[in-house]
Image (cartoon, rainbow, N blue to C red; front, side, top):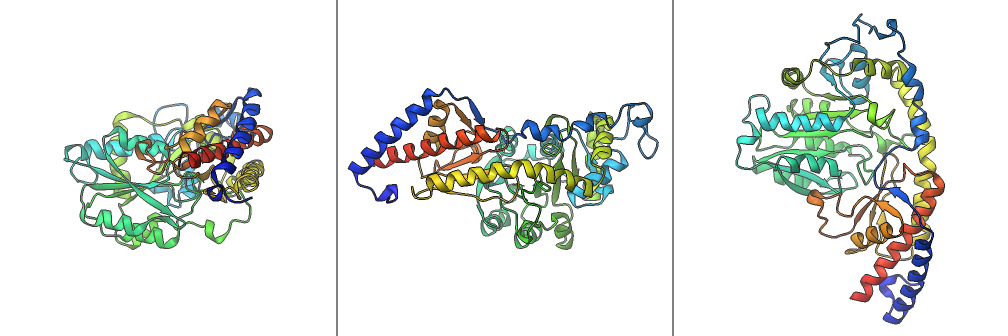
Length: 429
């Protein structure tokens, strides 16, 4: 069968009628399936149930330095929790602050600090006439929501197979002091699964910036979320902190990570790492708003996961659950859409998403058709700032939450909706 774009009007009309019949049969099933967010499935959450009994007695509540974790204090985290999160963050424990259950909260607070107080002596961003931010696209909608909430002008930067388009990034930061930061998901990026190359990391670390307070928000959310046990060379990520120190820009990165998809997303622990000077300033500001985060939960996590080796063993169990789901998605896309033309998709080795590029001008229609057939997906446009994808093309597929049988059914719906939307588009001219 020729690609859809090569078909004549009569062929397309015949195809459309057949797809409409298939779509009507799907609607008649009354499906109610959800692929909207990258949530762990219940079987993944079950893996961490023993965590809840890791601290059960008064004696259990003593940290390694004798701290009674039931009481106030310890603003920046227990020593054992700082050490554990330092392994995730590729940093030293003294450069780590352990937070609550959400790294997104730490990122929001970091933007708010710079906005209200400046950073390391710079002018508070709220006093500036304009503040701009670089947003690699497709990217993470919740990142974009943070900067949008502060009225920061977001500038899309294309993603490549090695990370953000560095020629564009370097051009934008070189002469414009109003460009204050960049969002980065450097390993198994959300949603396209790219891991930044060493060259991209070094260029981010060393690039000349007109703004001396330019900050890299390094959200390493998927640093341990491999789909395959044979972690390949292309999966390795150079540490941005070390690269920035080597380049003479030690204060440039704020690094973030959490156990949100490692244990229980609503009850994990998060952390940030930064230069000693940044850490001192952050602790000063944090101390006004909290006496300390949940130390019992920090203790539970360390006793359950133990160390980097224990974490790796635990994540291997996650991978065993997730791998068949991702392979099912890719098989369905290959079998259903390879000959259609106009479509492309990522083949991630880790993380939580498959990035799908539909024929231009059809993404919103595909998501609408899927919803009307009982499959909820992330909104088209969500992977761009202001939810505006100028190509109306990118769709984030989240395979993790549904059981395999539901995912199988959902992907059949998605494939049908993609074919139908593309056929409609071609017939419209």
